[in-house]
Length: 131
Image (cartoon, rainbow, N blue to C red; front, side, top):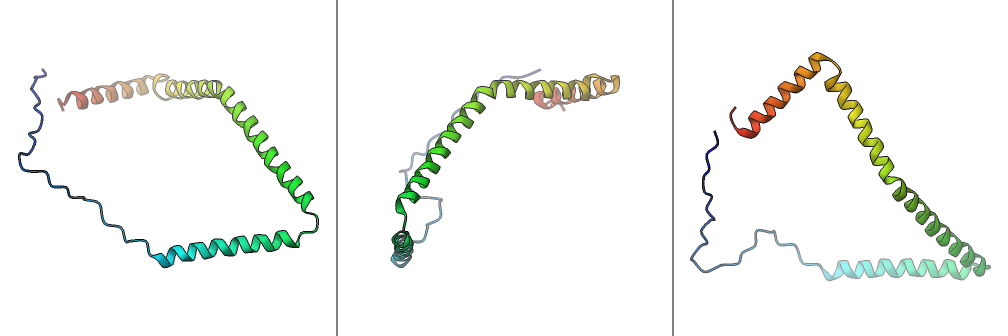
């Protein structure tokens, strides 16, 4: 038999609130590390500029690059639309597969049905706290 008990809210402290953080203090970002990142970016841009300047047929590179970007965008749109349109059917197959496994595992044989019944009774006792 369950008994009902009233649950009270915790009392708030009457002392003045003091703000303190339990999070660790992170080290300050050093200026030299940010300069290093800027210099790495500058080196990257310098290398890209050198390679761009060394190209003879820049229009071909732009056309191929643009075509690659457009092809990636179109293929990603098609893939996402196909997956999203088939998602309910995929989830239905997953559910049917799980139902088939459950029937095979627990309902097909008498011994497995007994095992399922004991598992359900154990779960009931755990939830009710009568164990």
